[in-house]
Structures are given as structure tokens and as C-alpha cells.
Length: 223
Image 1 (cartoon, helix red, strand yellow):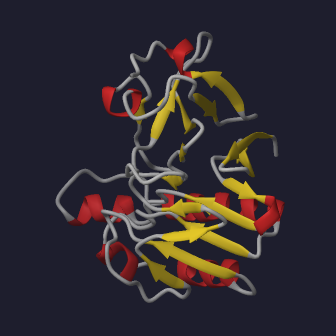
Image 2 (cartoon, one colour; image 1 turned 30 degrees about the vertical axis):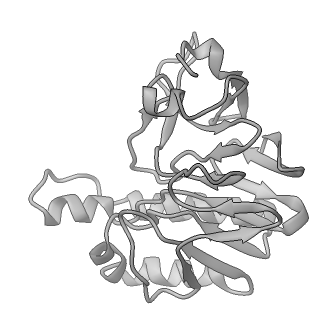
């Protein structure tokens, strides 16, 4: 698995091509916005019928990331489930898969706007967490340095057919892409993201390899 090395608050982090973040010195793997159970939630609320395989695919992706890095701790950075009913209604095979992934390691569920309450699926539930001078939270705040998710950033460079999920990083802030198999995204040209990041920010596109690109090259109008 390829990765791009980032340094945030003096800490060396790996922005991996699959959309996960690995912190080697801490043995820590972080993923954001799994949105497990999204297809079920849409159907339950009267929306269209979508392929019901996103939970299995997302867990398979997470399984591969864990196998690759063998972390001692996994942080799920909020919106791990599409809502609390999706968490409580998770199929038994998915629950067993999660239990296998959690075995022998610390597992932390960070509170998101889609899943704000505790869940009965093992691990520890927190609103946010500070480790080694870095704050892990779901939505970015002015309190930096921080690692967050929520926005599902995406970017496209010349020659690409479609936009790819991407990390956004500057000297004080790192925003993770959505890790879930069935998630939309917000273009990095959107003012919400463009004004949040510093002028020297980069996007690290996911895919076959981690591709770092200056945000300035993506046509953003940042502060």
C-alpha cells in the first residue's frame, strides 16, 4: 500500500492510498466516515433501494488496512454509522466481523453528527481524543493541531475520469477522506474547505497510490 508522509505538530503520519491514516510511532490507524448501514437507512426512511453491500465492502476495506499496518489502536473518527438505528440494526455477520477486527487492540469510536450516542459494539466511545499533541475529532474547529473528518473531501486532476476522495493537510490541520464504500463527497474547491485550509495546503488523492497535489493547483480560492 503506498502512502504519502505528512508531518503535523512534529508527528510523522502516513496518508495511505486507501484513505486510512497510519501513525507508526503510536501504532495507530485512523479512518473516518465509514457510514455503515447507509443503504439500509435510506430504504428505512422511504428513499430508493440501493445495493445492500456497502457495509460488507467497507468492513473488507478496513480489514485490509488493519492487516497491512497491524495497529495496536484503531480510531473511527465519527459518522461510523449512518445513524444510531443503523448501528443497533447491524447484521450479525457484520457484528462478528467488527469483533474480529477489534480483538487484541484498542478501538475508539469518536462521536459524529450521524452517530452522536454510545453504541453497543465494543470499544470506547468518546466525543474527541488527544494523543501526542494532536486532537482527534469529527468536525474541524479553530483548536489546532487537529485531525478530523466530516467533509468527505474529493478532488480531480487533469486526466482523471472522476474525482477521488482525498486528505487535506496544512501545517496545523488534517482532514481525512470518507472511508466508507458508499459515500458522496465535497469538492476541495468548495468555499467551506477552500477557506478552512492554509495557503500551502495539499490534497493527497487516494486510489492506486497516494497522490499529493497542492490545493492551489486545484483552482481553490483560499484565504
